[in-house]
Length: 414
Image 1 (spheres, helix red, strand yellow):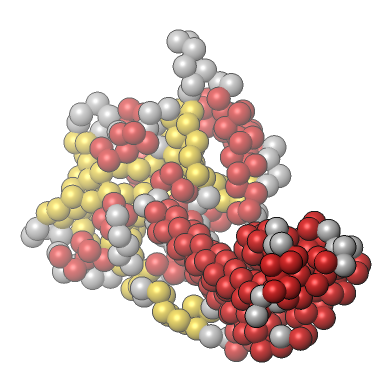
Image 2 (cartoon, one colour):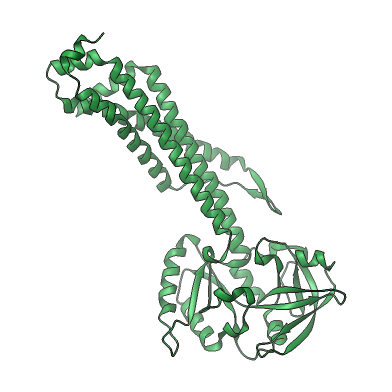
């Protein structure tokens, strides 16, 4: 085996130009994939952070069936005091949970005393909400951010503020239907204007949880959802599995589950963008495979054609077909190793340079966001193994042809 390795190295040195060009093609493919994975991964992580940290949280717990009818914001599917207590006990025992926020979601009529429109409201406790969604205050584009919100105040979504010409400091009135069908109204002072976002959240305002209880005439503890933030989002699958198991064990008198839990992926439409990024990465990897396959196969076919006499000579002196096959496969393997080594080094240096350059970009109204490309060791290993595997696979057909070549015919070749 070592002799085959030495011969393969010598053959690559003999054909320096071809070896160089093939190595550069493989290197280019490796660099393109690793850089794309690192940059797109940085953008994806930033996007997920913006969505989860500014409104959704990493996970949410509801009463069973609530999410299926969330568009109507049903008050008859709120969690009661006993169920809230149970959820608190479970979350208190989960070390991976950093914070959680109890919310009441409701629909109401919003009026500036001249015009009226409908609004969706998230009623929260400010301290808890800023723990579960630490970037929520950054969505306030006008008004005071410190403390988020106080009793008697409302954060109005930008869409409604523009449509009804509502400004910070104005007095508005909210009218809402209670659970029993009765109607109640309450005045609020506009504390701030919330940045508009796509999806249903574009009409979502915010009030204090105590104000929502007064407006809806709710006595006692009652909430619509629990938004949960983890210490590390990478723990999401494991924590979700544990919490889902604990919550699933609690059933009602009919033996049906009381709770349902969902990750941000099931709640936010932005998950489709994240999947699109993953799909683009997959196709980039396919392009890498194609580049490596074509370049290696082309080199090895030419190597076999140019070295027919050499193949005939080594076969005539007793070299077995398996060793001839191994020689050409080894050459493909070494080309793969060389190309991936150079490509990986260049990629890691480039990623470090990009991080040191502190490149910023804008995303919607978010300005000055820092591009922080990173790549996991697992992704690097995966790309390297794919390239080397394809390099070996591409050299098999030419190697097989060389191994089956008749020595006498090969020696007569001109």
